[in-house]
Image 1 (cartoon, rainbow, N blue to C red):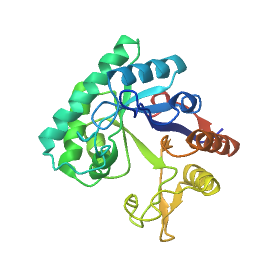
Image 2 (cartoon, rainbow, N blue to C red):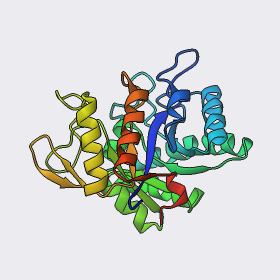
Image 3 (tube, rainbow, N blue to C red):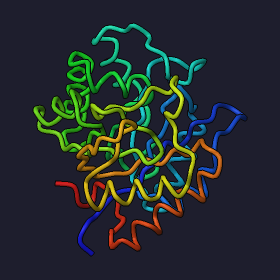
Image 4 (cartoon, helix red, strand yellow):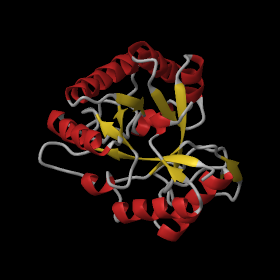
Length: 256
């Protein structure tokens, strides 16, 4: 096999008795997981359960910090300062690290969630705050991001960066994601999602909503676990990639 890729999804995004998605089934398909750390979803019990399941299966454990926005699922701009972003990320990362350590595992990557994840691509102050938090806590952490300010800040801090390609989201001509508030932001056709993902990984290209061929050198493919048919779609993506000669493996084991 020539190309290698990681498959990741956002997991542990329930709260109390309420659960989102079939995490157990997804973990049989994925090689990494972004685990909610309590600010947009997740709680100590769900975090513990999800980390335990990842450790048992050898799935890479990642912190998925968010704005403090349970009601809005982390999808609203909270107007925080860079200092607040830094301390909120430290708080969430530290909590997940403690749980991982209890289970004899470790947090290998960090991937900002939702609106925070969108803003760190364009806001240098937020990007620098997260890169500083990550490198001072654990310089071996991998930062998952799209090309942009966070990827640049993390590299400048000496951190490894895993560029994320998103399987079911539409891209704008400038390479950013189409906002969820706009029609067509999320792609639902499994055939189209599989075709786009294979092309993105094998050819390094994804087509924007305006028909522009955008170069994407991704290291990990994000599959959303909260959509209808997520498990079947993740399985289909994995099979399609393997059929195209792509090796699926946890990011921390091979990313330089």
